[in-house]
Length: 134
Image (cartoon, rainbow, N blue to C red):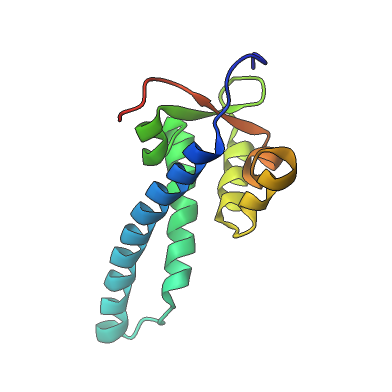
């Protein structure tokens, strides 16, 4: 990637977090309700909401970024995920990114290296891809 390419600031990352988390929570709640229907009527094993939330988060992040290089929040801000050299990340990078983003400690990387753990360890970056939707 060109060193002069502007990377994404903390405010944009916070907006990504808020928008994506709201969407993930809604999807997870719908799946949780669907599962609980089966628990009630067909004796499926019950699970807490957190299991559905984190599973939905991993699938959401992995599929959106693997297919489109962006989540709905990134579409909103006109950003996308690229590898450190500016190209499309490989499957392992997407897997690592989704797995690390699902952990609670992912954002602590901002404190000492300016990017979250899921960017650092997957060797990816966020860049501006197009004009933002808003």
